[in-house]
Length: 253
Length: 52
Image 1 (tube, chains in turn blue, orange):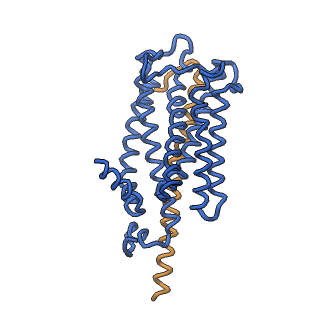
Image 2 (image 1 turned 45 degrees about the horizontal axis):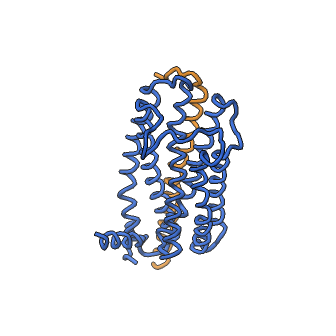
Image 3 (image 1 turned 60 degrees about the vertical axis):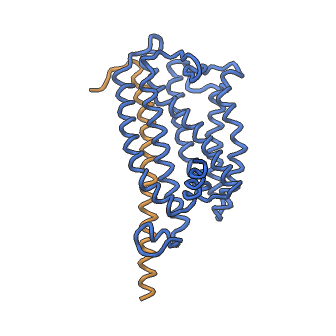
């Protein structure tokens, strides 16, 4: 079993195999994203009742929370890929780590903007220099820093290795974001969903959150494969595997 | 049928901004893919002509 996993892992290191894997998976991921997104949006906007205190404004959380979770999950995925990049120097892992950054930045932006819009009627302000909000803003800057650093090098492999070090340094912000509501007195509420304990969110409000979370995860997968595939093609434009992949003759390299 | 929410402007503006960012994220890689494939094809044709 472990040998098979290792073999599949190394096979995906081949650009042509990765390209074909991505081409096969992308339409499926987008199809499933649209189905789960439709189910989540329908329930979030038409099925669940208004909150007794927040009224309908709490419906914002159905995009805010999955985006926040994905912003942090993307960074964890990038950390794993950056570690693989620095230890084993697998180029597809390096490309995936770099191409995940704009996706993570987009989800962080969605989280910050929707949180600010929700904050206006609920807290009376769009923004507060609260520990959770500030650490999330730092995450956005870290994402932008990684993108900038990678783009600053003409040699993309060197850029990726240096940006990978920044990814490993920046991961310290993830536990800060997660525990900020416990370590400091914050305006932001604590966790309402607990995987290992009772959730304080009413069960009737939970299904759209699950659908939207699954949709965001699938969307992340599709976007990551699309961007990584593009980056591989761009870097290897003149290599034989590209001609093979695009069916313009040539042989595997 | 659009639901009539209280705090409607906050709810709809949040969903609209999220939709705009997601659509932009979805369109960008498709456009880049087309551009790169176009470049590769153009380059391949030029190299083929040079060989002839």
